[in-house]
Amino acid sequence: MRNDEILSEEQEENQDENVNPQDSPVRLGSVITHRGDKVIYCLTIIGQIEGHYILPSNNKTTKYEHIIPTLVAIDEDENIGGLLLLINTAGGDVEAGLAIAELISGMKKPSVSIVLGGGHSIGIPLAVCADKSFIVKSASMTVHPVRTTGLTVGAPQTFEYFRRMQERITRFIVDNSNISAEDFSSLMLNTGELVTDIGTVLDGEKAVECGLIDAVGTLSDALDALYEMINN
Image 1 (cartoon, rainbow, N blue to C red):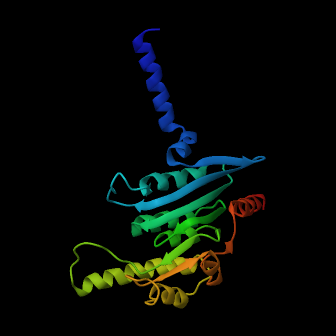
Image 2 (cartoon, rainbow, N blue to C red):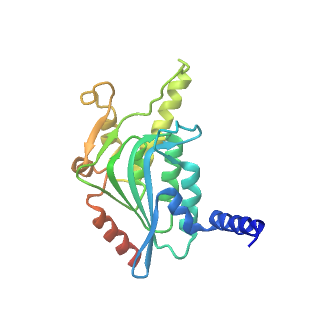
Image 3 (cartoon, rainbow, N blue to C red):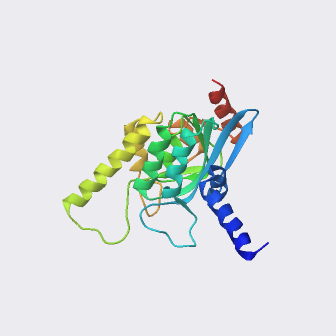
């Protein structure tokens, strides 16, 4: 076989990889699995949510430009019955995280999330956006207000911008969980728990007690709930 024929075959394989949706889970660290004829897509949200700015290469990131089209493909794929969301995130870009959460909450297919390790900051909307949410006992969630680092303009408009952004996040969380706006604000503005910040750290059971997460559970609990939703 000639070299140009080998090169042509390699190019065709690369092109197939670019268009084959089955390859996407491998590149994103996710998998497609099934129980009988019921197929689910398992999507991971890890590290920091990367938005419009690229984070350093030594950071674990979830890139919203990868996740958003993947969610559209999942919802349109007739072979996929539901979405399992595995969450272990420190937070990150607010608008990117909220965009992903809005997409998941608007999917027509059933979805279940489970917080493993941590679901902090903007990871909270991502945890509650699914139809049913779980958290393992050892996981934690940090509730705190919107904040930024670096130079900011010390003007009333800046504070108004942050206030309105916080309202967007709070409204989404309240609409997609069983916590009230008053209780969430109380957790968010707590000054007696974090040493250098305001907010509250919730473990798995406390996150359920306050209504933020639906249930404490394991991976098998989340899978069973999702397959039951698909069957129904």
